[in-house]
Image 1 (cartoon, rainbow, N blue to C red):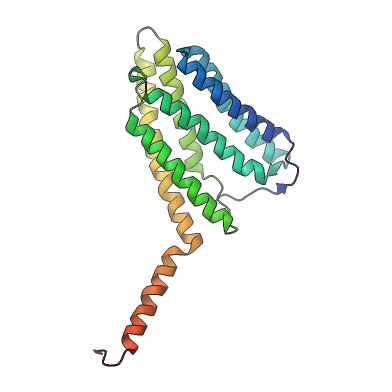
Image 2: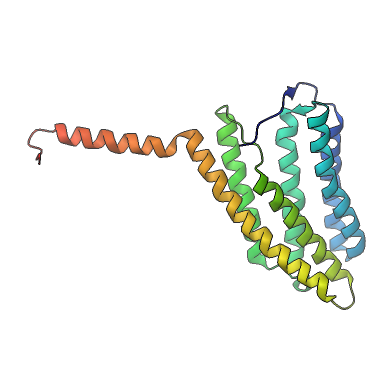
Length: 214
C-alpha cells in the first residue's frame, strides 16, 4: 500500500471540513437528479468531486491527516459515487446499466470490509493508485452521463466519452478490487495460514499408526 502520512490528533481541520461539505453536496446532487435538474446536478457533482483532491492535498501538505479523515474520506467518496450511480442506473437515458452499478457497489462493500479487517489488525490500507484512477474514471463517466441527460438531443462526443470512461471505470473497479483482496490476504496471512493447516494435517496423518509410507 502507499506510504502513509504522519497522523494528527486534531480532527477540527480544513480537510475534514471539506469532506463533510462533500457529504452534504452528495445529498444535494441526488435531490437535483430526482428533480430532473441535470445541469445543476452536474455542476454540484463536479465541485463535490474536486474537493476530494483538495482535501487530500491539504491534509498531506499541512500534516493534517487524521484517523477520522482516513475513515471519513473514503466513506464519503463511496456515498457520492454509489448514490449517483444508483440514480443514473434508474434513468434509462443515462446510459449507466444496473449491472455496472452493482459492480461498483459490490466492490466498495468488499473494500470496506477488507479495510476494517486490515486496519483493525494494525495495518495500513491506504488507497492505491489504481483506486484513485478508478475514482477519476467513475466521476468522468457519471459527469458525462449527467450532461447526456441535460442535452435535449444526445451529443455524440459526450455519449462516446461516457461509454469509454464507464468501461475504463469498470475495468479499474475490478482490477483494484483484486489488488485489495491480495494485499489484505497477504497482511492477514490467510494464504500462509491455510498452508500451515494443510502441512500440519499432512504431518498428523503421517504420524498416525498404520499410515502407509512410500
